[in-house]
Length: 179
Image (cartoon, rainbow, N blue to C red; front, side, top):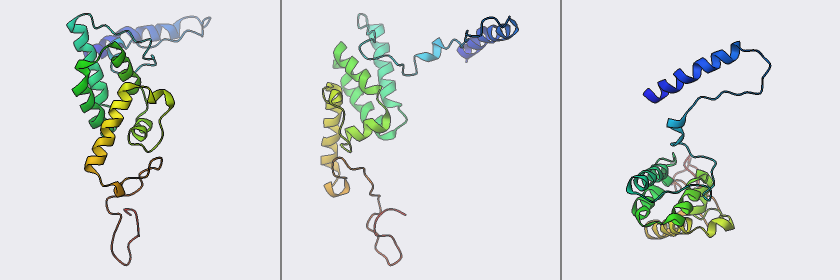
């Protein structure tokens, strides 16, 4: 709360003074300073431009906690569970290249990533070369093979459309679906 208060206190006077100033410079855009919040949002940085500091334990701990948070709090329950558990189990053994691969996977959009991990769609070729993606995909495939009957899954490349009550028995019920 204090960080938000500081951002507002430092930004509001600038905005108000810019409205009173002469209208000679209309191209200036004032944005609030959100440095304390920006670390929680994903950025447009590529994994290659990401600076990874593993030199001391404190920076390593902060980086691991940030990546663990990003993997567990994606807002897509299936990915939260799968990625969060995988990152929790494997992040301590990752080197700098592994972390860059993980950041690349975490920067992907949720629906696309889930379709690629669950084999509903073919991933792009560059993603098939990502060691983190391949390891997570292997884990998802192994869990599906161990815990889900093949007839409950869609064929590769097809979306999952069947519901939990697909095979209703009754005169007035639909043949498939959960309507």
